[in-house]
Image 1 (cartoon, rainbow, N blue to C red):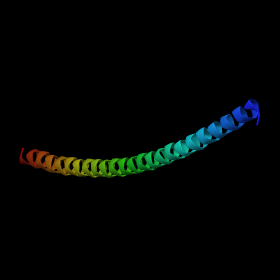
Image 2: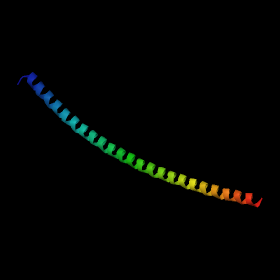
Image 3: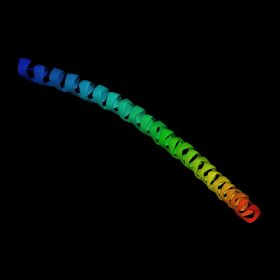
Image 4: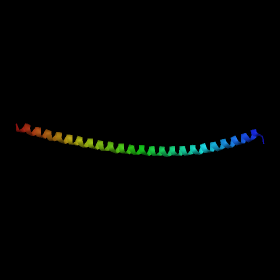
Length: 87
């Protein structure tokens, strides 16, 4: 065998080994990225649920406050009406 043929064979083996190793590493990196994206997606879904439950609570609280205001306005109007009749 020529030294040139031997050099080409050695370089081909080294490059093939290197590309296989890099391919395996790339596969692991992509797998970890997929797992990370799945976790981020789950976190965003959970955050959406928390935000929805908080907004529901705030809207219910606002409704309760409006009801109290309406009740107090009725009570105050009855008190004023009672004072007007006494005079």
